[in-house]
Amino acid sequence: QQPVQSPQAVILREGEDAVINCSSSKALYSVHWYRQKHGEAPIFLMILLKGGEQKGHDKISASFNEKKQQSSLYLTASQLSYSGTYFCGSSTSGTYKYIFGTGTRLKVLA
Amino acid sequence: GAVVSQHPSWVICKSGTSVKIECRSLDFQATTMFWYRQFPKQSLMLMATSNEGSKATYEQGVEKDKFLINHASLTLSTLTVTSAHPEDSSFYICSAWGLAGGNEQFFGPGTRLTVL
Image (tube, rainbow over the protein chains, first blue to last red):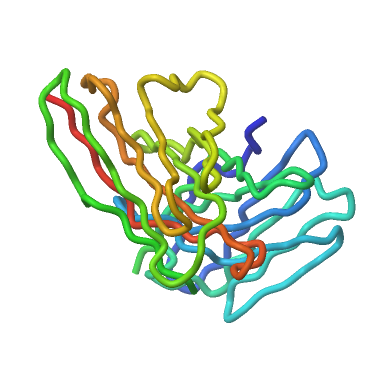
């Protein structure tokens, strides 16, 4: 079952923050976040494995709730290069097969 | 990170012809490769999972006889779209997973297929 992302789309000014949510009806083994530019392959951002985990690098961070059914991606002080479509990818226990979320289109304006 | 290549980057073909897309892991052994299809402004949809030396596992709704997958070695998987039709036009992306990569899948750059 495909995870649902919200919002579907968001427009920001450079320097503004954004939060993208990924929700599943079932507990996930892991959640992965990707950014995809038009016509290109997805670029890996980060993976979360444990309930309650939070991690980040530079100005992008993510969390995974205790029940492992929701993850959020936080973009701080957005830059033009952050524009793209963000996908969460979830895997179920014991497999490395991903089901990608519905996607969130993000556009950062100067 | 590990490098995965796809060939060709794009292909245009006539309806009824077959097209082969190659996916190679260049610097690691890919135990498992995944094939995705992505229509414009939509998410990536997993088509099939292939393990080296065994038959591919297809997702529900994906025709096995139309999308032939071969994973003959630890560095190469191929997807053949047989008797392609315009509705098969899409962006096809492969990814590779191996023990050395931990939990991460490494994605190829994608192949854009246009069927006229």
